[in-house]
Amino acid sequence: MIASKAASKSPAAMSAFTMTGAYIAYSRTAYCRWAKAMPDRMLSTMDVLTEGTIAAHRHRDAYAAVVRSGSYAETAVDGCIEVRTAMIVVHPALHLHANVVNDAGRVWNTPIQKQAVSLWGAFAGRGAERLAGLDRRPMDDEVLEALETCSRVARMRMPAWLSDLTTLGFKRFDVARKDVSREHAHRVFKAYFGMSPGRWRRERQLQCALARLAGGASQVQAAVDAGFSDQSHMCRVFRTELGATPGRFSIAGGRSAGTSHSFNTASDSGY
Image (cartoon, rainbow, N blue to C red; front, side):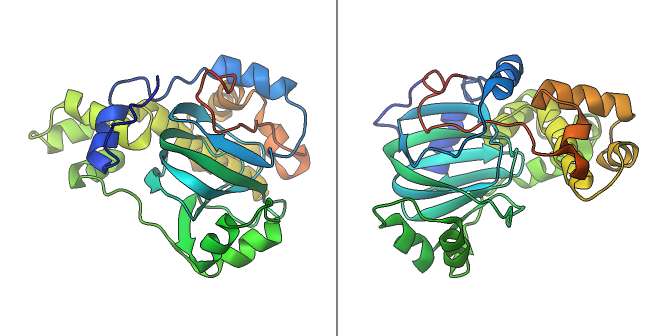
């Protein structure tokens, strides 16, 4: 699905676009097959922003996208950000996100080998402007240095009731908020986070478990802390989403499986 060139860049317009249901055309089975076959390599030197939708995907390593030109909306379990020229977007390893490109452009993709950033977000400031003007891909040290002179860009504001929904879940939300229908809540939720409430909850659990395993927790403890019903449940989610068992993502498990991508439309990127 390709976005219209005449489409407005306002948050409301982007929400209307993502509500079509084609925003997340993510195939977990295809992702797992592709992740297993993907060689261990760096991200491409420069990616092209092509107008359209980039389906939900993950990257093997933490990386930063320095936006040289163009604009896009990026959604994730953490919310939605409107990304513009001269911003740096930081992604932790295996962070699930999707994009709707409104204006074609180019970005520098820089792997952050030190894994120095654990939170997703966009940053703007003098350092980002300087890197966007380079004629080469910046090094990871340059990106980290630039981030020190930048400020975090605010995420798109969500309605107060949507915040309630993320806290209460649909069952308790239906009782607490009679003024918002379940159907409307589901549409707005998917527009803002780029995924269904069920997928959002599962992704939150997955990211929590990954963090606990990376911190040295046992698989049993990671499953409990992340809210899985048991260790077997966690293993099933890991296999479905990442194509590997939790043991591969623990401190002793070596590198994690993931993919890189170029900023083309979903069909062009192999998803």
